[in-house]
Image (cartoon, rainbow, N blue to C red):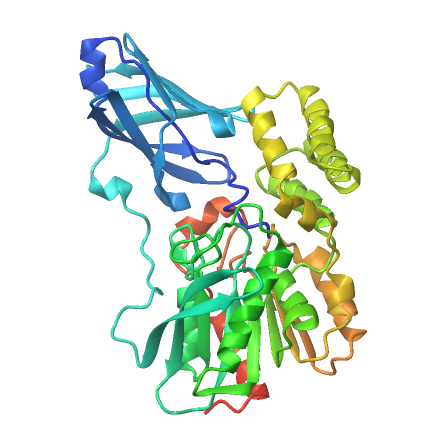
Length: 465
Protein backbone atom coordinates (compact mmCIF):
# COMPACT_ATOMS: atom_id res chain seq x y z
CA UNK A 1 0.00 0.00 0.00
CA UNK A 2 1.67 2.81 0.57
CA UNK A 3 1.92 3.16 -3.03
CA UNK A 4 5.39 2.81 -4.46
CA UNK A 5 5.06 6.43 -5.62
CA UNK A 6 5.47 7.42 -1.97
CA UNK A 7 8.24 4.92 -1.23
CA UNK A 8 10.31 4.54 -4.39
CA UNK A 9 12.68 1.68 -3.73
CA UNK A 10 15.69 2.81 -5.72
CA UNK A 11 15.20 5.99 -7.72
CA UNK A 12 13.43 9.01 -6.38
CA UNK A 13 13.13 12.55 -7.56
CA UNK A 14 15.53 15.35 -7.94
CA UNK A 15 19.08 15.82 -9.41
CA UNK A 16 21.16 19.30 -10.76
CA UNK A 17 24.07 20.73 -12.45
CA UNK A 18 26.91 22.93 -11.40
CA UNK A 19 30.13 24.03 -12.84
CA UNK A 20 31.85 21.95 -15.48
CA UNK A 21 35.49 22.88 -15.54
CA UNK A 22 37.30 20.96 -18.26
CA UNK A 23 36.36 21.96 -21.80
CA UNK A 24 36.90 18.49 -23.28
CA UNK A 25 34.97 16.88 -20.44
CA UNK A 26 32.22 19.47 -20.75
CA UNK A 27 31.73 18.57 -24.37
CA UNK A 28 32.23 14.87 -23.72
CA UNK A 29 29.40 14.53 -21.23
CA UNK A 30 26.81 16.33 -23.34
CA UNK A 31 24.25 13.87 -24.71
CA UNK A 32 22.27 10.86 -23.55
CA UNK A 33 23.87 8.09 -21.52
CA UNK A 34 22.48 4.74 -20.47
CA UNK A 35 23.52 1.82 -18.33
CA UNK A 36 22.06 -1.14 -16.46
CA UNK A 37 22.07 -1.21 -12.70
CA UNK A 38 22.24 -4.69 -11.21
CA UNK A 39 20.34 -4.34 -7.93
CA UNK A 40 20.52 -8.05 -7.12
CA UNK A 41 16.84 -8.90 -7.50
CA UNK A 42 16.32 -6.77 -10.61
CA UNK A 43 18.22 -5.11 -13.44
CA UNK A 44 17.24 -1.50 -14.04
CA UNK A 45 18.09 0.67 -17.03
CA UNK A 46 19.25 4.17 -16.13
CA UNK A 47 19.32 7.04 -18.63
CA UNK A 48 20.87 10.50 -18.14
CA UNK A 49 20.17 13.31 -20.62
CA UNK A 50 22.77 16.08 -20.34
CA UNK A 51 22.35 19.29 -22.34
CA UNK A 52 23.99 22.68 -22.75
CA UNK A 53 22.15 25.57 -21.12
CA UNK A 54 22.62 29.31 -20.85
CA UNK A 55 23.85 28.88 -17.27
CA UNK A 56 25.96 25.81 -17.84
CA UNK A 57 24.70 22.26 -18.21
CA UNK A 58 21.26 20.91 -17.40
CA UNK A 59 20.29 17.29 -17.05
CA UNK A 60 17.41 14.92 -16.53
CA UNK A 61 17.29 11.29 -15.59
CA UNK A 62 15.03 8.40 -16.62
CA UNK A 63 14.50 4.95 -15.17
CA UNK A 64 12.48 3.31 -17.98
CA UNK A 65 12.00 0.05 -16.10
CA UNK A 66 10.49 1.93 -13.14
CA UNK A 67 8.38 4.20 -15.31
CA UNK A 68 10.26 7.31 -14.12
CA UNK A 69 11.01 9.90 -16.80
CA UNK A 70 12.19 13.49 -16.85
CA UNK A 71 13.61 13.49 -13.30
CA UNK A 72 15.47 16.80 -12.93
CA UNK A 73 19.14 16.39 -11.99
CA UNK A 74 19.96 18.31 -8.82
CA UNK A 75 23.75 18.43 -8.87
CA UNK A 76 26.32 17.52 -11.50
CA UNK A 77 30.03 18.23 -11.36
CA UNK A 78 32.71 17.49 -13.94
CA UNK A 79 36.33 17.92 -12.88
CA UNK A 80 38.90 16.69 -15.34
CA UNK A 81 37.56 13.34 -16.49
CA UNK A 82 35.54 12.74 -13.32
CA UNK A 83 31.75 13.03 -13.41
CA UNK A 84 29.54 13.25 -10.32
CA UNK A 85 25.72 13.29 -10.24
CA UNK A 86 24.25 13.81 -6.78
CA UNK A 87 20.65 12.97 -5.84
CA UNK A 88 20.29 14.77 -2.55
CA UNK A 89 16.63 14.01 -1.86
CA UNK A 90 17.27 10.28 -1.69
CA UNK A 91 20.88 10.47 -0.57
CA UNK A 92 22.07 8.89 -3.81
CA UNK A 93 25.05 9.68 -6.02
CA UNK A 94 26.72 8.53 -9.21
CA UNK A 95 30.49 8.94 -9.45
CA UNK A 96 32.30 7.99 -12.64
CA UNK A 97 35.22 8.61 -14.95
CA UNK A 98 35.17 9.22 -18.69
CA UNK A 99 37.08 6.39 -20.36
CA UNK A 100 37.89 5.17 -23.87
CA UNK A 101 38.22 8.70 -25.29
CA UNK A 102 35.01 9.80 -23.56
CA UNK A 103 33.05 6.96 -25.19
CA UNK A 104 32.00 5.56 -21.78
CA UNK A 105 31.59 6.63 -18.16
CA UNK A 106 32.73 3.97 -15.71
CA UNK A 107 31.42 4.50 -12.23
CA UNK A 108 29.34 3.57 -9.20
CA UNK A 109 25.81 4.38 -8.04
CA UNK A 110 25.58 4.72 -4.23
CA UNK A 111 22.42 4.98 -2.17
CA UNK A 112 21.40 4.21 1.41
CA UNK A 113 24.80 2.74 2.18
CA UNK A 114 24.79 0.39 -0.82
CA UNK A 115 26.94 0.70 -3.94
CA UNK A 116 26.36 -0.72 -7.42
CA UNK A 117 28.70 -0.59 -10.44
CA UNK A 118 27.19 1.33 -13.34
CA UNK A 119 28.80 1.71 -16.76
CA UNK A 120 27.21 4.40 -18.94
CA UNK A 121 27.40 4.37 -22.73
CA UNK A 122 25.81 6.66 -25.35
CA UNK A 123 22.07 5.98 -25.55
CA UNK A 124 19.78 5.62 -28.53
CA UNK A 125 15.97 5.82 -28.62
CA UNK A 126 15.54 2.12 -27.92
CA UNK A 127 17.42 2.49 -24.63
CA UNK A 128 15.01 5.14 -23.33
CA UNK A 129 11.70 3.52 -24.28
CA UNK A 130 9.60 1.88 -21.55
CA UNK A 131 8.43 -1.72 -22.04
CA UNK A 132 5.25 -2.11 -24.10
CA UNK A 133 1.83 -1.86 -22.43
CA UNK A 134 -0.43 -4.11 -24.54
CA UNK A 135 -3.46 -3.70 -22.26
CA UNK A 136 -3.63 0.07 -22.56
CA UNK A 137 -6.90 0.86 -24.39
CA UNK A 138 -6.69 2.33 -27.88
CA UNK A 139 -9.55 4.14 -29.68
CA UNK A 140 -12.13 3.61 -30.90
CA UNK A 141 -13.95 2.27 -27.82
CA UNK A 142 -17.36 0.53 -27.88
CA UNK A 143 -18.72 2.85 -25.19
CA UNK A 144 -19.20 6.53 -24.39
CA UNK A 145 -16.53 8.53 -22.53
CA UNK A 146 -17.62 11.88 -21.04
CA UNK A 147 -15.42 14.51 -19.45
CA UNK A 148 -17.07 15.49 -16.16
CA UNK A 149 -16.45 17.67 -13.12
CA UNK A 150 -17.34 16.70 -9.56
CA UNK A 151 -17.88 19.37 -6.92
CA UNK A 152 -16.89 18.68 -3.31
CA UNK A 153 -18.76 21.51 -1.62
CA UNK A 154 -17.51 20.81 1.87
CA UNK A 155 -13.88 21.06 0.73
CA UNK A 156 -14.56 23.89 -1.73
CA UNK A 157 -12.93 22.21 -4.72
CA UNK A 158 -13.79 20.66 -8.06
CA UNK A 159 -12.41 17.36 -9.32
CA UNK A 160 -11.93 16.68 -13.01
CA UNK A 161 -12.69 13.20 -14.26
CA UNK A 162 -13.88 10.80 -16.94
CA UNK A 163 -17.14 8.86 -16.90
CA UNK A 164 -17.20 5.86 -19.22
CA UNK A 165 -20.62 4.28 -19.76
CA UNK A 166 -22.05 1.58 -21.98
CA UNK A 167 -24.14 2.55 -25.00
CA UNK A 168 -27.84 2.76 -24.34
CA UNK A 169 -30.07 4.69 -21.98
CA UNK A 170 -29.52 2.45 -18.96
CA UNK A 171 -29.94 2.74 -16.08
CA UNK A 172 -26.44 1.32 -15.64
CA UNK A 173 -24.69 -0.14 -12.63
CA UNK A 174 -21.81 2.21 -11.81
CA UNK A 175 -18.63 2.29 -9.76
CA UNK A 176 -16.26 5.02 -8.56
CA UNK A 177 -12.55 4.12 -8.62
CA UNK A 178 -10.49 5.23 -5.59
CA UNK A 179 -6.72 5.11 -6.04
CA UNK A 180 -3.77 4.18 -3.88
CA UNK A 181 -1.51 6.51 -1.93
CA UNK A 182 0.44 9.35 -3.42
CA UNK A 183 -0.86 11.96 -5.87
CA UNK A 184 -2.71 10.04 -8.58
CA UNK A 185 -4.35 11.15 -11.79
CA UNK A 186 -7.55 9.56 -13.09
CA UNK A 187 -5.59 6.73 -14.71
CA UNK A 188 -3.73 5.89 -11.49
CA UNK A 189 -0.54 5.62 -13.50
CA UNK A 190 2.28 3.68 -11.86
CA UNK A 191 5.45 2.60 -13.67
CA UNK A 192 3.94 3.56 -17.03
CA UNK A 193 0.93 1.34 -16.25
CA UNK A 194 -2.43 3.16 -16.47
CA UNK A 195 -4.14 0.92 -13.91
CA UNK A 196 -7.49 2.67 -13.75
CA UNK A 197 -7.67 3.24 -17.50
CA UNK A 198 -7.32 -0.51 -18.04
CA UNK A 199 -9.75 -1.31 -15.22
CA UNK A 200 -12.36 1.22 -16.40
CA UNK A 201 -12.12 -0.02 -19.98
CA UNK A 202 -12.66 -3.63 -18.90
CA UNK A 203 -15.60 -2.86 -16.61
CA UNK A 204 -17.35 -0.61 -19.10
CA UNK A 205 -17.04 -3.19 -21.87
CA UNK A 206 -18.88 -5.52 -19.46
CA UNK A 207 -21.80 -3.11 -19.01
CA UNK A 208 -20.65 -1.21 -15.90
CA UNK A 209 -20.29 2.59 -15.92
CA UNK A 210 -17.08 3.86 -14.31
CA UNK A 211 -16.10 7.24 -12.88
CA UNK A 212 -12.40 7.92 -12.35
CA UNK A 213 -10.97 11.31 -11.43
CA UNK A 214 -7.77 13.25 -10.85
CA UNK A 215 -7.16 13.52 -7.12
CA UNK A 216 -7.27 16.95 -5.54
CA UNK A 217 -4.33 19.08 -6.65
CA UNK A 218 -3.40 16.61 -9.41
CA UNK A 219 -3.62 17.26 -13.17
CA UNK A 220 -6.88 19.14 -13.88
CA UNK A 221 -8.41 18.95 -10.38
CA UNK A 222 -8.52 21.87 -7.97
CA UNK A 223 -7.15 21.91 -4.44
CA UNK A 224 -3.87 20.84 -2.89
CA UNK A 225 -2.79 17.25 -2.46
CA UNK A 226 0.00 17.95 0.00
CA UNK A 227 -1.36 17.75 3.52
CA UNK A 228 -4.43 15.72 2.57
CA UNK A 229 -5.19 12.66 4.70
CA UNK A 230 -7.12 9.50 3.83
CA UNK A 231 -10.11 11.11 5.54
CA UNK A 232 -9.89 14.16 3.24
CA UNK A 233 -9.70 11.89 0.20
CA UNK A 234 -12.76 10.00 1.47
CA UNK A 235 -14.68 13.26 1.28
CA UNK A 236 -13.67 13.62 -2.37
CA UNK A 237 -14.73 10.05 -3.17
CA UNK A 238 -18.08 10.67 -1.45
CA UNK A 239 -18.65 13.68 -3.70
CA UNK A 240 -17.97 11.44 -6.71
CA UNK A 241 -20.57 8.93 -5.45
CA UNK A 242 -23.18 11.68 -5.03
CA UNK A 243 -22.41 12.90 -8.54
CA UNK A 244 -22.98 9.42 -9.98
CA UNK A 245 -26.24 8.91 -8.11
CA UNK A 246 -27.66 12.04 -9.71
CA UNK A 247 -26.38 11.34 -13.20
CA UNK A 248 -28.97 10.44 -15.90
CA UNK A 249 -28.61 6.87 -17.12
CA UNK A 250 -27.06 5.66 -13.84
CA UNK A 251 -28.93 3.29 -11.53
CA UNK A 252 -28.83 5.23 -8.26
CA UNK A 253 -29.46 1.99 -6.35
CA UNK A 254 -26.48 0.18 -7.92
CA UNK A 255 -23.56 2.53 -7.30
CA UNK A 256 -20.43 1.09 -5.70
CA UNK A 257 -16.86 1.92 -4.81
CA UNK A 258 -13.73 0.12 -5.98
CA UNK A 259 -10.71 1.04 -3.91
CA UNK A 260 -7.16 -0.08 -4.58
CA UNK A 261 -4.44 -0.10 -1.91
CA UNK A 262 -5.13 3.04 0.19
CA UNK A 263 -8.38 3.27 -1.77
CA UNK A 264 -9.34 -0.03 -0.13
CA UNK A 265 -9.07 1.75 3.22
CA UNK A 266 -10.90 4.86 1.99
CA UNK A 267 -13.89 3.09 0.38
CA UNK A 268 -15.36 1.59 3.60
CA UNK A 269 -14.83 4.97 5.29
CA UNK A 270 -16.85 6.66 2.54
CA UNK A 271 -19.71 4.18 2.92
CA UNK A 272 -19.96 4.28 6.71
CA UNK A 273 -19.21 7.97 7.34
CA UNK A 274 -19.85 10.09 4.25
CA UNK A 275 -22.11 8.60 1.57
CA UNK A 276 -23.60 5.08 1.51
CA UNK A 277 -23.06 2.88 -1.53
CA UNK A 278 -24.52 -0.42 -2.69
CA UNK A 279 -21.36 -2.55 -2.85
CA UNK A 280 -17.62 -2.38 -2.16
CA UNK A 281 -14.67 -3.89 -4.03
CA UNK A 282 -11.41 -3.67 -2.07
CA UNK A 283 -8.23 -4.55 -3.97
CA UNK A 284 -5.16 -4.90 -1.73
CA UNK A 285 -7.06 -3.07 0.98
CA UNK A 286 -5.50 -2.71 4.46
CA UNK A 287 -7.31 -4.35 7.37
CA UNK A 288 -4.79 -3.68 10.18
CA UNK A 289 -3.37 -0.38 11.51
CA UNK A 290 -1.01 1.45 9.22
CA UNK A 291 1.98 1.15 11.53
CA UNK A 292 1.74 -2.64 11.34
CA UNK A 293 1.58 -2.59 7.55
CA UNK A 294 4.63 -0.34 7.17
CA UNK A 295 6.74 -2.46 9.51
CA UNK A 296 5.82 -5.66 7.67
CA UNK A 297 6.21 -3.99 4.28
CA UNK A 298 9.76 -2.86 5.06
CA UNK A 299 10.81 -6.26 6.39
CA UNK A 300 9.34 -8.20 3.47
CA UNK A 301 10.89 -5.93 0.87
CA UNK A 302 14.29 -6.19 2.50
CA UNK A 303 14.02 -9.97 2.57
CA UNK A 304 12.93 -10.10 -1.09
CA UNK A 305 15.96 -7.97 -1.98
CA UNK A 306 18.27 -10.54 -0.40
CA UNK A 307 18.85 -9.11 3.07
CA UNK A 308 19.98 -11.62 5.69
CA UNK A 309 17.58 -12.66 8.47
CA UNK A 310 19.57 -10.62 10.99
CA UNK A 311 19.45 -7.56 8.73
CA UNK A 312 15.69 -8.01 8.29
CA UNK A 313 15.30 -8.19 12.07
CA UNK A 314 17.27 -4.96 12.42
CA UNK A 315 15.11 -3.24 9.81
CA UNK A 316 11.94 -4.47 11.48
CA UNK A 317 13.13 -3.24 14.88
CA UNK A 318 14.05 0.20 13.54
CA UNK A 319 10.73 0.52 11.72
CA UNK A 320 8.86 -0.41 14.88
CA UNK A 321 10.70 2.29 16.82
CA UNK A 322 9.98 4.90 14.17
CA UNK A 323 6.32 3.91 13.96
CA UNK A 324 6.04 4.09 17.74
CA UNK A 325 7.36 7.64 17.65
CA UNK A 326 4.86 8.64 14.96
CA UNK A 327 1.98 7.02 16.89
CA UNK A 328 2.73 8.41 20.33
CA UNK A 329 4.39 11.80 19.80
CA UNK A 330 2.22 14.79 20.69
CA UNK A 331 3.07 16.78 17.56
CA UNK A 332 5.21 16.80 14.42
CA UNK A 333 8.12 18.52 16.14
CA UNK A 334 8.36 15.70 18.66
CA UNK A 335 8.14 13.11 15.87
CA UNK A 336 10.98 14.88 14.04
CA UNK A 337 13.19 14.97 17.13
CA UNK A 338 12.66 11.30 17.92
CA UNK A 339 13.19 10.13 14.34
CA UNK A 340 16.30 12.28 13.94
CA UNK A 341 17.76 10.85 17.14
CA UNK A 342 17.12 7.26 15.99
CA UNK A 343 18.56 7.74 12.51
CA UNK A 344 21.62 9.68 13.67
CA UNK A 345 22.78 6.56 15.49
CA UNK A 346 22.86 4.73 12.15
CA UNK A 347 25.22 7.20 10.53
CA UNK A 348 22.89 8.04 7.66
CA UNK A 349 23.53 11.10 5.47
CA UNK A 350 21.75 14.28 6.59
CA UNK A 351 19.73 14.47 3.38
CA UNK A 352 18.37 10.96 3.86
CA UNK A 353 17.51 11.67 7.50
CA UNK A 354 15.69 14.85 6.52
CA UNK A 355 13.76 13.00 3.81
CA UNK A 356 12.63 10.40 6.36
CA UNK A 357 11.57 13.09 8.82
CA UNK A 358 9.51 14.86 6.15
CA UNK A 359 7.72 11.61 5.34
CA UNK A 360 7.07 10.72 8.97
CA UNK A 361 5.75 14.14 9.95
CA UNK A 362 3.35 14.58 7.01
CA UNK A 363 -0.37 14.74 7.91
CA UNK A 364 -1.02 11.78 5.61
CA UNK A 365 1.55 9.58 7.35
CA UNK A 366 0.48 10.50 10.87
CA UNK A 367 -3.16 9.67 10.03
CA UNK A 368 -2.32 6.44 8.22
CA UNK A 369 0.01 5.12 10.92
CA UNK A 370 -2.63 5.65 13.62
CA UNK A 371 -5.73 4.56 11.71
CA UNK A 372 -7.19 1.10 12.35
CA UNK A 373 -9.55 0.04 9.50
CA UNK A 374 -11.15 -2.84 11.46
CA UNK A 375 -13.85 -0.88 13.36
CA UNK A 376 -15.06 0.65 10.09
CA UNK A 377 -15.03 -2.72 8.32
CA UNK A 378 -17.19 -4.15 11.11
CA UNK A 379 -19.86 -1.52 10.29
CA UNK A 380 -20.16 -2.40 6.59
CA UNK A 381 -23.68 -3.56 5.66
CA UNK A 382 -23.41 -4.10 1.89
CA UNK A 383 -21.82 -6.83 -0.28
CA UNK A 384 -18.00 -6.76 -0.21
CA UNK A 385 -15.35 -8.33 -2.41
CA UNK A 386 -11.80 -8.16 -1.03
CA UNK A 387 -8.96 -9.33 -3.27
CA UNK A 388 -5.25 -9.73 -2.54
CA UNK A 389 -2.26 -10.89 -4.57
CA UNK A 390 -0.21 -13.67 -2.98
CA UNK A 391 3.05 -11.87 -3.89
CA UNK A 392 1.99 -8.45 -2.60
CA UNK A 393 4.81 -7.03 -0.46
CA UNK A 394 3.11 -3.69 0.19
CA UNK A 395 -0.15 -4.96 1.73
CA UNK A 396 0.88 -8.55 2.50
CA UNK A 397 -2.07 -10.97 2.24
CA UNK A 398 -0.85 -13.13 5.14
CA UNK A 399 -1.11 -10.07 7.35
CA UNK A 400 -4.30 -8.54 5.94
CA UNK A 401 -6.59 -11.20 4.46
CA UNK A 402 -7.45 -13.03 7.73
CA UNK A 403 -8.27 -9.82 9.67
CA UNK A 404 -10.26 -8.55 6.69
CA UNK A 405 -12.28 -11.77 6.65
CA UNK A 406 -12.81 -11.67 10.42
CA UNK A 407 -13.89 -8.02 10.49
CA UNK A 408 -16.34 -8.41 7.61
CA UNK A 409 -17.81 -11.63 9.01
CA UNK A 410 -18.65 -9.76 12.19
CA UNK A 411 -20.26 -6.95 10.19
CA UNK A 412 -23.97 -6.67 9.27
CA UNK A 413 -23.17 -7.68 5.68
CA UNK A 414 -24.33 -11.18 4.74
CA UNK A 415 -22.38 -11.16 1.44
CA UNK A 416 -18.60 -11.22 1.97
CA UNK A 417 -15.95 -12.67 -0.34
CA UNK A 418 -12.22 -12.53 0.52
CA UNK A 419 -9.81 -14.10 -1.98
CA UNK A 420 -6.04 -14.31 -2.43
CA UNK A 421 -5.06 -14.61 -6.10
CA UNK A 422 -1.96 -16.75 -6.53
CA UNK A 423 1.15 -15.26 -8.15
CA UNK A 424 -0.05 -11.65 -8.34
CA UNK A 425 1.66 -8.59 -6.84
CA UNK A 426 0.34 -5.37 -5.30
CA UNK A 427 -0.83 -4.10 -8.70
CA UNK A 428 -2.36 -7.52 -9.48
CA UNK A 429 0.25 -8.26 -12.11
CA UNK A 430 1.74 -11.75 -12.55
CA UNK A 431 5.06 -11.38 -10.71
CA UNK A 432 8.22 -13.19 -9.69
CA UNK A 433 9.36 -11.40 -6.53
CA UNK A 434 6.57 -8.89 -5.87
CA UNK A 435 9.09 -6.06 -5.52
CA UNK A 436 8.09 -2.62 -6.85
CA UNK A 437 11.19 -2.71 -9.06
CA UNK A 438 9.37 -5.34 -11.15
CA UNK A 439 6.25 -3.25 -11.80
CA UNK A 440 7.52 -1.40 -14.86
CA UNK A 441 9.27 -4.47 -16.28
CA UNK A 442 6.06 -6.52 -16.42
CA UNK A 443 4.08 -5.90 -19.62
CA UNK A 444 0.74 -6.90 -18.08
CA UNK A 445 -0.94 -3.94 -16.38
CA UNK A 446 -3.49 -6.06 -14.51
CA UNK A 447 -3.95 -9.82 -14.77
CA UNK A 448 -7.07 -10.77 -16.75
CA UNK A 449 -8.17 -13.15 -13.98
CA UNK A 450 -8.19 -10.26 -11.50
CA UNK A 451 -10.23 -8.12 -13.90
CA UNK A 452 -12.63 -10.98 -14.53
CA UNK A 453 -13.01 -11.72 -10.81
CA UNK A 454 -14.12 -8.13 -10.18
CA UNK A 455 -16.48 -8.01 -13.15
CA UNK A 456 -18.14 -11.36 -12.45
CA UNK A 457 -18.70 -10.46 -8.80
CA UNK A 458 -20.30 -7.08 -9.60
CA UNK A 459 -22.46 -8.50 -12.39
CA UNK A 460 -23.74 -11.27 -10.10
CA UNK A 461 -25.00 -8.69 -7.60
CA UNK A 462 -26.47 -6.03 -9.85
CA UNK A 463 -28.76 -5.82 -12.84
CA UNK A 464 -26.04 -5.40 -15.47
CA UNK A 465 -27.48 -5.61 -18.96
